[in-house]
Length: 166
Image (cartoon, rainbow, N blue to C red; front, side, top):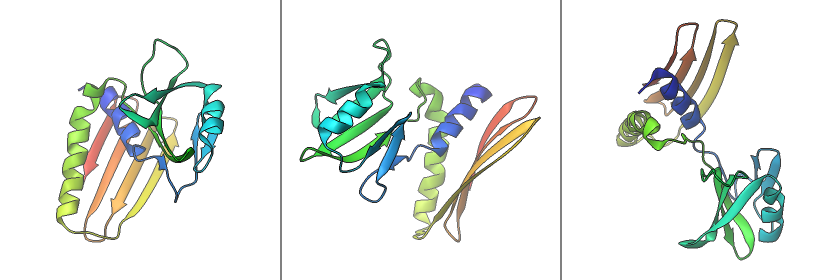
């Protein structure tokens, strides 16, 4: 996989867990803010101004959020409604071409699977970045006491790199 694509995938995977549920009350889709508990009608109306929102045939309580451009069927996110109210919202962070993310996702899966085998129970997530004119570094760390996983995306004048350590 080209390093640039891998770096994009890494950046996207750093954010992959974004969702809103009862414990995290709101989420932004672009400039549109939706909140858990909003009525289905108000949620769909708010998003309709910037996105196509289509009911998922196989799961009638789920709605796919897609770009307004009718030729683009890439999911931006998913909404779930229970009893006429928004109960969950998730964002899709990519990549658009799923095969570009397979190698990185396998590496991340391996790191998380080994963490699960260590029976770690309390973990702290941290993310940071450092930018200067010649480079940028993005990191996300999952620290579970005896085990730590770090995902890094680095860019310099020569190339982009992505790494998983753990």
